[in-house]
Amino acid sequence: MARKTFEEKLNDSRDMPKLVELDDPKAIKRYGGKIMLIAPPLSYDAVMKQVPYGKLITSDTVRNYLAKKHGADFTCPLTAGIFINIAAGAAAERKTDETPYWRTLKKDGELNEKYPGGTDAQKLHLEMEGHTVIQKGKRWFAEDYKEKLFELE
Picture 1: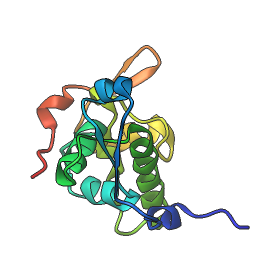
Picture 2: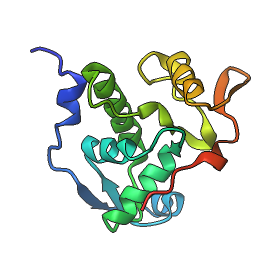
Picture 3: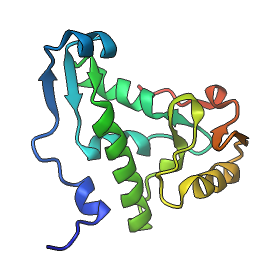
Picture 4: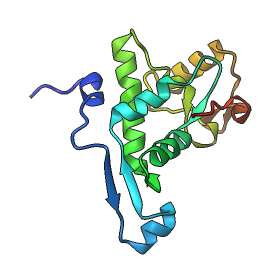
């Protein structure tokens, strides 16, 4: 069987969005609630497309926005990371109607090494938009990213 393209993965919503109620006290405490959203990849893509030139967003902000929108306490962090990367991969495959995935940073403004082209490509995109990228150890961060955060409505 042929491997799915990122675009096919992006458009595979299966039974999502899905709300899951947790009953494990440790998980409830860790995530701050019982109701977890598993949002489809297209939901992440749609939010990432809203971020305009010169602005940034974090994956946590995207996750919190989707959870609130669907009446959940939080989103599944594992699927969120996977689906954000699928949106990025699909954007790179399409070349047109590109989702500006490079504007979506990891927690604390860190660049995402799993994006197409890795941190080097994300760094280049961000610098072309006027952002300063700094290295801390082996990791890269958008400097002063909090000052350039995009507010979702």
